[in-house]
Structure formats: structure tokens, C-alpha cells
Length: 297
Image (cartoon, rainbow, N blue to C red; front, top):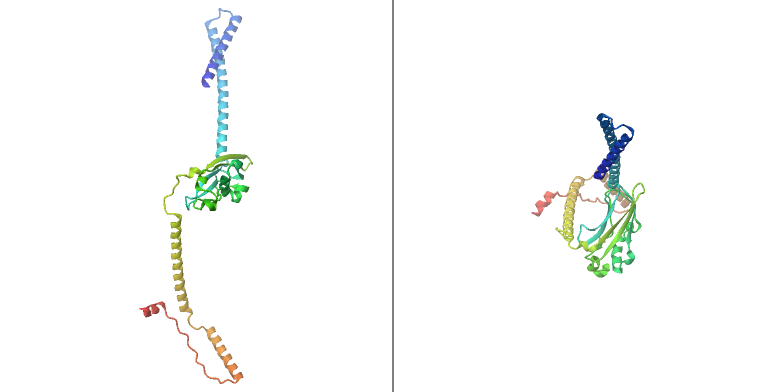
């Protein structure tokens, strides 16, 4: 582009000089001095340079406008929402598969809708698999709002489940692929649309190093059981300490016991029963833990 501009400017300068020379040849005498001819040539070159500068300035202005538009588009692309969907294996096991929907853009997404493209062309087995993912409510009715970096999970498929229970085989699952069309808006109601091809066979070869979910579950149950035993032991110690401080008679307990004895005595006198002094057992003081341990040795 710059090479073409240079050639055009050179041609324009040459034509301007020719026009000036022709004008001079018709209007002035050929007997003019060499200084006059040099002045005319300088004026012609100055005029051509001015034209070249004007064209260069115009090109520079157009280039600046183009760069400004590119920067604006780049900023818009960096600040607009982008809703992504992908296959994901669950942390518990590589045999549990679900879809993850996440807003990877730098602004919030609104009015998010999910549709399966060409769902009628899928066979019955593939429709069962797709419905497993779409059985959760927001996949069928959409999301009103998804903030930056926020995500949602769909329903999951357990590949360890029996074929009869889930309605398809492992080969049926790995042979399924479908396209999800996602439409959403930004805060200014500008609409966006994306399509994602999800192929289940991409999960072939995925593995995870570490303990299985069953082993982790057993370990967690052992930790819970150990914690419960510690809580029970602490509760026993607390009860023993409490009984040590609360095993004696309080004044209110003595008054209640004495009033009960007097009531029984009045009842016996009213009924004509022989009254005799009744012996009441003294409460035995409970032994401490150390005393019990000494007796058990």
C-alpha cells in the first residue's frame, strides 16, 4: 500500500512540474534567466510535496481510525460474556460424567438458553443419554443470570451402573455426540450465540491416579468413628466431674425430703396406724475414677 502511494505521489509531482513548464513556455519568454526557471521548479516541487503530505496525513488518519476500531473491538471482546459448556468427570470417580456450564467472560451473562441442535436426527439411545444431562431444570428452562467465573453442573451419568438400569451400554454412550446451542445476552441486551459439539468418545483414555472413591469413603468413615469415640469419652469425663460436685444434699433437697416425711406421718396418724421411727438410708457418695481404678486392679 505504501509503495503504491509513493508511485502515485511521484506521478502527481511529475505532472505538476510538466504543467508548470508548459504554462511557462506559453506565457513567459524563453529568454528568462536561469534563476526564474529554478524558482518555477522549486515552486512546483513545493506544491507536489504539499500534496504528498496531505495524502500521507489522510492515510495516517485512516490508519489511526482503523487501529482505534480494532482496539475497541478487542476491548469489547475482552469484557463481553462467554458461556462455555464441556464434558467433565466428577471428582468421586472417572465413571461419573456430567456437563459443566461456566461463564468464561469478564462480565455477567443474562437470559441463557440451551437447545440441542437437530435433536430429531438422534436415535432413541442417544436421546436417553441426552435427557440424562438435561433432566435438571435449568437445562430445560434456561438460566436468568450467570456471573463472571460462575458455573453450574448438569445431571450426571454413572457408567458403573448396570446397562438395564440406565438404559444403554457403554459403547452406546461413547458413540453419542450432539451439538448444544447456547444463546445469552449481556447487560446491554446484546445477544450472543455459540455452538459446541460434545463427543462422548473424547473421554476414552482418561484416568485418575490415587485412591478410589470407595477407599476414600471408608477412610472418612473411620475418621468419623474415631471422632465420635473421642466425643463420648469427653462426655463421660464431664459427667463424672459434674456428679462429683452435685452428689451432696442441697438445702432445698433436705426441706423437700423433710416435708415429705411429715406428710407421711400425718397420714399415718389420721388412719390410726402405729407410727414408728423409720430409718432412711444415707446417700452413698459416688466414688471417683481413681478409686474405681484402684478397686479394679
